[in-house]
Structure formats: structure tokens, C-alpha cells
Amino acid sequence: MRKVFIHTFGCQMNEADSARMIEALAKSGWAPTGSPDDADLVILNTCSIREKSEQKLLSALGRYRPLKAERGARIGVGGCVAQQEKTRLLKKVPYLDFVFGPDQVGKLPEIVRRVEEENVRLAETEWLDSSTYVFPQADPDFARGRATAFVTAMKGCNNVCSFCIVPYTRGREVSRPVDEILEEVRGLTSVGVKEITLIGQNVNSYAGGVSFAELLRRTAAVDGVERVRFTTSHPHDLSDELIALFAEEPKVMPHFHLPVQSGSDSVLVRMRRTYTVEWYLDRLEKLRAARPGIAITTDIIVGFPGETDEDFQKTMDLVERVRFENAFSFIYSPRPRTAAARHLHEWGEVPRETAVARLVRLQAVLREHSFEYYASCIGTQVEVLVEGPSRYDPERRFGRTPENRVVNFDGDAEVGQTVMVRVDEATPNSLSGVQVGHSPAEPAQRGDSGRVRLSVVS
Ligand code: SAM
Ligand code: SF4
Image 1 (cartoon, rainbow, N blue to C red):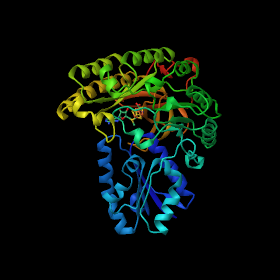
Image 2 (cartoon, helix red, strand yellow):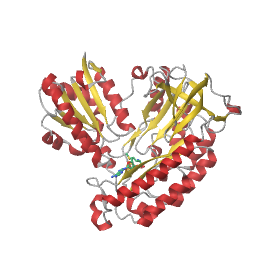
Image 3 (cartoon, rainbow, N blue to C red):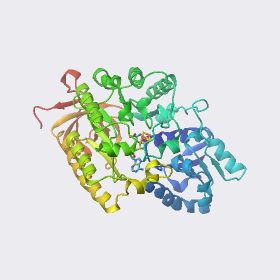
């Protein structure tokens, strides 16, 4: 069998798309390989959210170029850069064979066949709207041996955040019909998957026949589903119904990723985020009341055009107030076609050194807060769903707590089992410990966050 290697950049949507590419190509006789060196086909599934992501594509392409001369491998680029650049990418990179947009994943085997048989260079980047788009269905056979899976709930985004290129690379929102989603979930649990993460750029604006909260409820009710997660959510679509679900449905895990972007209302207005800091804090307060101990994580941009020292201080104040469990933080990167890039000079470009200094200050505080959460687990037992061997030591196991904290531990549990682990050490983004039992604690013993405080620690 000929072999395909996929290099995935960026978000969970891209990870899920790459999985669908492998499955589609398998039907045409392609086998996946973990190494580009024995691949006959190399696909780069790209991200264009920041300029750096695009630069990463170009340097990776340079690394794969010799494969073409040495073994005649074909090279294709998919994802957001493909959608943005279209045929321009074929002109810029003469050794590239084909370019395809995120909506063309199902057509990939046909594109590859044409490239090979007709010896043509192709760019397929047509948008498909809700009347024509069919979400590729995951093949459960490929999920065998896995404890967790992403399930696509929707694609695209109808918001127009002024910094963001996603609406131009992923198009308008299309929600996947609820029955299709549940069928995919049933297929995944039939091969042993225990945790489902529903994904979409703006997943909580889901409109595929039921509300997003109802979709989560129905997903949790599928036989074999033990944990339900979702990402990413926009604060203005965080409904009371969704908050109430956190009090009602224990299979929905106590973790909410809610990107705030800035702690300054005037910056949020220029970002076109359509909520205020007060609204954001109110949502968090209600979430924390609905599920005490819930882990709140976020995304923050610094150096957005016109961000003053006072604006940045407001972000720092918000961070102190919320004490996020984890956060992705970025320096603003101007993206083509976006409103913020067009208004960059009018609103005021923040000098690079200022933006870097702000990011360094912010990340130091974020790290401190993360570490406090992780260190507070030392001496407790946490419930862990085992996902596989630890990345750092294959003799150890790796899994996550309900709050999505990464745990590496000594033990003999199998993938898909949920076990209790005694935590002995913590870093700002992981826990380390020892398995102390095969079954999770009885619900009565458990705190809302699934954590048990030990009375005696040996
Ligand atoms: N849909 C999510 C939301 O509304 O929050 C965000 C999805 S985006 C793929 C992930 C994160 O990338 C954003 O939350 C934002 O913090 C960051 N991001 C997006 N565009 C950016 C830009 N031009 N410069 C820097 N960071 C950016
Ligand atoms: Fe981008 Fe805003 Fe849509 Fe998120 S909600 S994907 S930041 S446009």
C-alpha cells in the first residue's frame, strides 16, 4: 500500500479534518505513516490564524521538498492557508502539486487521483454552504484503541471579530444535523471511546435542530459516553440553559474554555467582541455557582491596535480577578482582509517591544495562577481517564482529570479506564503521581470537581 503522511498545524478543527483525510484516503488504498521519509504523499493541513503559522508552513514545505526529488512523493496543502492563498500558493511554491480548502476534505481522494493520473497541478477551494455541504462522518475503526475523540458539531463562524481571519478561511456557520452527530458518537463508543469533545469555531452557537445544551445532553445520554467536553465557545453565545446544564449533567466535564481576549471594554469594542467585561464576569460567576470547582481557561491577545497601558492594566486586573486555570496568550498579528489590519494605523499600532513586554508580564502571572491550581492537587487523589503512555516515559501512563488537567503517572491501567491517581508533584501545566486504584471513587466521596482530599497520604 502506498503511504500518506499528514502534518497538522493549528486547532482541534484541523486535527479532526486530518483524521477525516486519513479515513477518506484509506478507502482509496492509502495507508497512514508516522514518518514523512517513507511517504508517497505528504499533506500539510495548515493554520493562518497568525502570521507565524504561515511562516511555519513555508519552512515545513522546504523540509519536505527533497522527498519529491528523492522518491517522487506528491505534496499537497490543505486547511486555512490553502483557502486564503488558493492558486497563489501554487505559483509561490513551484514543487507543490495541489491545494485544497477545508470544505474539500471529502474530495481529497479524487483530487489526488487527478494529480497522479492526469499529471496536473490543482487548486480546489470552493466554498460549500449549508445546502450542499456534507460533514464527513468519522470511521469508528480508526478510533479503536483510543479513549477520546473529537466530533465536529459545526463549521465556520458568523462573527466578525476584527482581528480574526477565520470567517474568511472557514466561511459562514453550518451546523451538523443532530442525528448525524449522535450516530457518529454511537459509532465511536462502540469501539471503546469514552470521552467525546464536540468541536466548532464557535460551537455554542450550534443550530443543528436542537440547542447546544440539548446536543450536549443527548451526547451524554449515548451508551458508553462517560465524559463530554466542547470547544470553542464565544462568551456572547453562553446561554443560561448551557450554564444550567453544568449543574444538571455530571458527564459534562467541569472545564470551560471561554476566550475573553481583553480586559478592557474599549478594546473589546474595537475587537467587535459584542460583550463587556461585566457580562463576561457575570457568566463566569454563574458558571462557578452551577459547578463549583469548574476550571476556567481562556485566550488573550495583547498589543491589539490602540491598546494603551491602561487597557493592558485592565487585562491584568481581570486576570487577577478571575485567576484562570490556564490561558493561551498571543501578540496581535495583523491578518489580511480583517478590519483591525485595515484600521491598524488609525487605531494605533502597538510597538513590538511594548507588546512583547506586555506578553511577558501577562504570561508570568498566568503561569503563577496555573501553578497554584496544579500545586493544590498535591496530596489529593484525582480521577484520571487513561489516554495512553506518557510522552516522556513510555513506562508511565498519561490521562486527564475532569478539569482537563494532564496527569502522568505510574500504574498499570489500560487506555479507556478511569482510575484514581495520588498526586505527588505539579508543574504549571501537568501533574505527576501514582495510580492508587482501578475504579473511581464513589460519587458520594467525590467533590464536584471529581477530586478527593486524602486524610492520610503515605
Ligand atoms: N472562536 C474562538 C473565539 O471566539 O474566541 C477563537 C478561535 S481562534 C482560532 C483562537 C485564538 O487565536 C483566539 O481566541 C485569539 O485569541 C487568537 N487569535 C485570533 N486571531 C488572532 C490574531 N490576528 N492575532 C493574535 N491572536 C489571534
Ligand atoms: Fe474568529 Fe471571532 Fe469567529 Fe472566534 S468568534 S473564530 S475569534 S471571528
